[in-house]
Amino acid sequence: MKILLAPDKFRGSLTALEVCNAMEKGVRAAFPTAKVIALPMADGGEGTVEILTQNAGGTLVNCTVQDPLGRSIQTFFGRTPDRNTAFLEMASASGLKWLVQNERNPLKTSTYGTGQLIANAVEAGAKKIILGIGGSATTDAGIGMAAALGWKFLDKNGQELVPVGENLVYIEKIIPTKIPLDIAIDVACDVTAPLFGHAGAAYLYGPQKGATDEAIEWLDKGLQQIASVVQRDFGVDLAQIPGTGAAGGIGFGLLFFLNATLKEGVNIVIEQTRFEEQLEGVDLVLTGEGKMDAQTLQGKLIAGIARASKARGIPVMALCGTQLLTPKEIHSLGLTYATSILHRPMSLPEAVEYAYQGVTETTHSLVSMLFFLQQ
Image 1: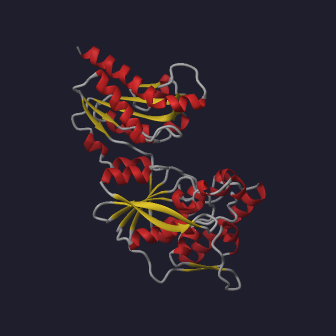
Image 2: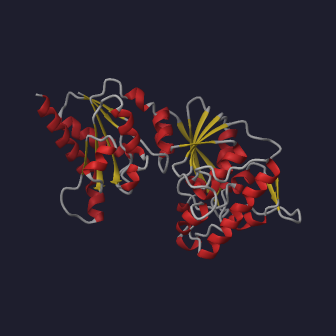
Image 3: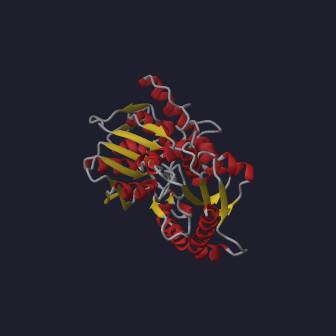
């Protein structure tokens, strides 16, 4: 039996690599002679840089950038051994994780640090960037990022604006950088929101970033303003393209300022890890994540893994902490089986502590059953 382990992290308890280790322990206990391939996965969000860098045999590079409020922080990006491809996460520079609760205000935050992160990767020799944009603290349409790369934004009096969310509404002129970046950028973007409007960046995601009702209205006006200036002066109408509202409108900014390509995060990870190649000769795929719910149905990692495996006729079983899907929904994903690793009531702290053991024991039970059925 050849088994491919391809789980996501169990958020708050186990990394994807730890899940793989627990699964392998369970497989070995049930079927010592099985061939096991461990392939820690991610969905384009938190942890993707480490997963992709490790898979490529690359290294992490430390650098100094600005956090969402302009403070100096230490962060990192990954790169392949040949240095041609860099792996970046917007959240590592411009994420909510850098702010305490009372600092969260997308009127005042900026993606400047993300621009610095991109500049560092280019300076280090990258010709291509894979960029995850989840977990942002910003709603600035990417003007902070662009400012770090040499773009300028002027008001009606010709004065340069500080590139933060509250100043979007004042933009009357955009001055491009004198040294455009010659780099291909693929963006892991699972959000399909347009730039502005009630389904756009400010209204849909502003509240979780600390925006009040008044701030949301102001930010939405600003997003409309920059879209209008870009269309008027550059002849480009991008605002209604799905994904331009992602991460506070940086989807729009990446398309306009850097000519990036927006892709589903899971597809990027499957491509970069050569997942479909890894399926050759595999009898069973084991995957999993912390919670399986409605989001799992919306193109997340497990759905992508099940889709690729099902196309080859390979059964896929999923383990998780919380399992909220119906049998019909599990089947619709292409999964053969899905189960929780928790087999008795327990508190959240207990569940976190038990996660490794639960993954090991549940994997052991599943593989034992399959081994018995094959006899």
